[in-house]
Length: 158
Image 1 (cartoon, rainbow, N blue to C red):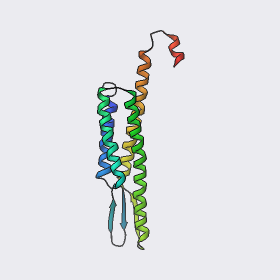
Image 2: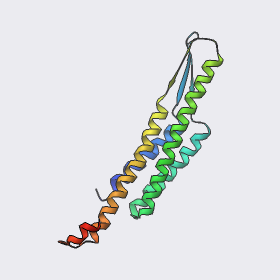
Image 3: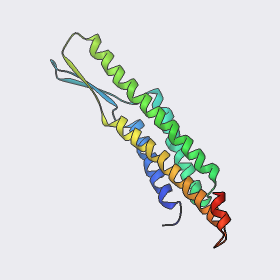
Image 4: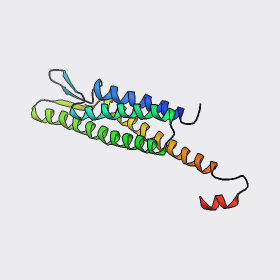
C-alpha cells in the first residue's frame, strides 16, 4: 500500500466503529436480580460529540488520501484525542448513572459496563495512534528528501 493509505483505512474503520458505538451500542447495564429486568444505558448527549468526532475523522482521513500535510495529521491527532477523552467521560457517566439507579432501589441489583465504551475507547485510541505513526512517517520522509547520500552533516542536524 502507498504511504498513508493503510493509516487512512484504519482511521476510517475506527471512525465508523466510533459512530456505531455512539449511536447503537449500549454503554452500561443495570439488572434487577429479583425481577430479572435489565436496563441498558446508551450514548446520550455526549454521544453527539462522538458522532461529530467520528464524522470529522472520516473527512480528514479521506483528505489525507489526496494530501499529505502535517497539519492534517495534527488535526486527526487532535480529533482522536478529543474522541478518546469524550469516550472515557461517556463510559464513566453511563456506569455512574447505572449505579445511581441501583442505589435508588432497595433491591438486589447488578451494574456493569457494556461493550460500547470499550469499542469507542479502542476506536478513538486507534485514530490517535495511527495519526502519531503517520505524522512520524511523514517527518522521516521529509527529512530523507532533504539529505544527500553520503552527507554526514545531515545526521548531526537530526
